[in-house]
Figure 1 (spheres, rainbow, N blue to C red):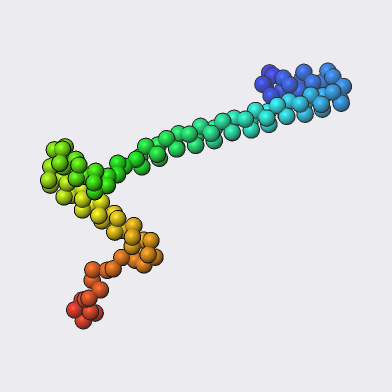
Figure 2 (figure 1 turned 90 degrees about the vertical axis):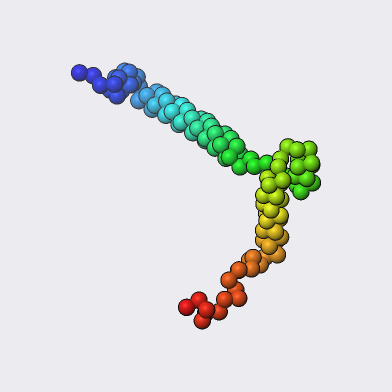
Length: 118
């Protein structure tokens, strides 16, 4: 019974020693080249898919305070929505300022002494 792996050996057995080695080397070169090409295509596809997933999940609309005022004045958002969004924008701005200073934001429990905590 012939196995699939023995067929190339039988095909090359009829040829001279040098030509067999050259043909095996050529076949091995083709296999390596095809493998490298498939790896490159796979990495490119993975990066493309990963980039589209991560960019779509990070897209958050940002508004300035003037945008929020305009939306409120045009009646597109309520006063309560305006106040919540305004607080969020101001809080994000304060976080950015604190981060830019290099100092952590103040802890709200700094004024509590160790004796009070017990």
